[in-house]
Length: 460
Image 1 (cartoon, rainbow, N blue to C red):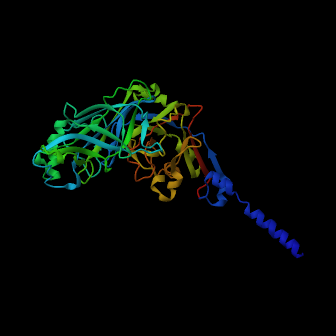
Image 2: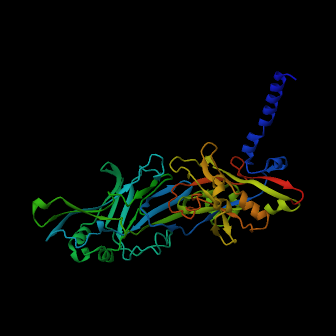
Image 3: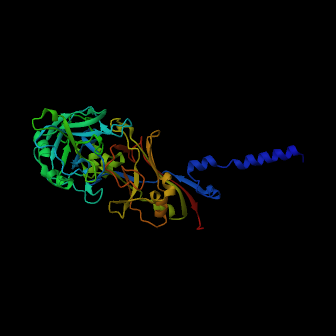
C-alpha cells in the first residue's frame, strides 16, 4: 500500500469519527449523558398539566431606596394604587440644628427623583396622565419589624394618619436640576412647625419621635378609561429627594433664600410601599372569575400581575406514571409558557425574568426547586424572557427526577413574578411589569411540558 492510500484512509477515518451527533446533543440538552446512552432517548411533550391564577394577599415590602408611586387602570388587571409610607430625618445626622433666632418659612416642598429609564423599567401605564397627589402626616411610626424587611404591602397594612392632607394637587412630574422629579408643595404651617420647634431638632431620635412620617398616595386620582394612569419607580435616596424648606431669619432681607433639606435616606430611614389591587375595577372577566374561585377559566389564560398580586398554580399530577414499569433518567423537564400576544400593550411590557417554584407540603407556601439550588444547573433552569419566541422556558429536571424516584412528594408548582436567582426569588415588591399567558386549552398560545428521558428496562 503506497503513501497516497494510507493518507486517504486516515482522512476518511478522521472525518467519520468527527461526525458525532453534536448538533443533536445540543438540541436535546444531552451534554450530561454518556454517549452510549443516547440511543435510548425519548422525548414527550404530551404530559398533562393544569394551570389557574391565584390571588396573593401579602407581599413583603423591603426597606430600600426604590419605591413606587402612582395609579393605573390596566385594561387587563384593573386598578392598582401604589402608595408610600416613609419617615424623614435631619440630613447628615446633624444635632442641635438652628434656623436662627426668628426663622420664618418662605415655602416647603417634597421632591422625589423619578428613575427615568429608556429601557422601560422605570414606569408602567400612561405617564402623560395627570394624577392627584395627597400627602398626609402619620400618627404612628414607620417601623420595619426586622432589619430591612417585614412589613406587608397589602390593603390590610395601614398606618394611622391625619384626616387633612398637607398637599392635595393634580400634577405631572417636572424637570428639577435636569431630572424628572415629583415636586409637591406642602402646607405652610407644617413647614413653619419644622423649623421653629427647636426642641425637636436636638437629634434625629428626638426628631423622628415627634415627626413620625408621611403617607404619599395617588389613590384619589380619577381614572376614567383603561390605560389611564401610571406607576413610577422613585429613588428616595437620591440627593434631590427630600423635604426642602426655604426660609429667612426674622425681617432681615439679606437672609432670604436660605434652604435646608430633611432627607428620606440615612441610617434612620424607614419606608415601604402599600399596594392595592382592585380586580373589580375594570379587570378582565376571565381573571376576575379565576380569583373568585372558577379555576377552570385558567384553561384559556393565566395572569401574573405586578408587585406579586397574583401567581399561577401549576399541577402536573401524572409524573409518577413514567416509572410504573421502568426506570428512567431525566435529561430535561421543560415548562414552556407562551405570552398571549392578544394582550400585548407597550405601556406595560413584560417581566425580564420569572421563577418557577414548588408548593411546600401542599400548604400554599413556596420553596425553591432543586434546579435553583444547584449552582451548576442554574443556567439550564433559565426563566429569562425570550423576546424572539415570546415565551419563558424553565428546566426542572432535578425536581422531576426526585419526584419520580420518590425522594420528594409532588405537591405542584407556582409560577411567580420574581427573579429566578435563588437569592432574590423571595422578593416581589419590585416587580413593576405584568404578563398574560395562554392556558392549556388556548390553541394559539398553548403551554407545553416537555420531558427528555432515557428508559432503562432493568435497574443498572
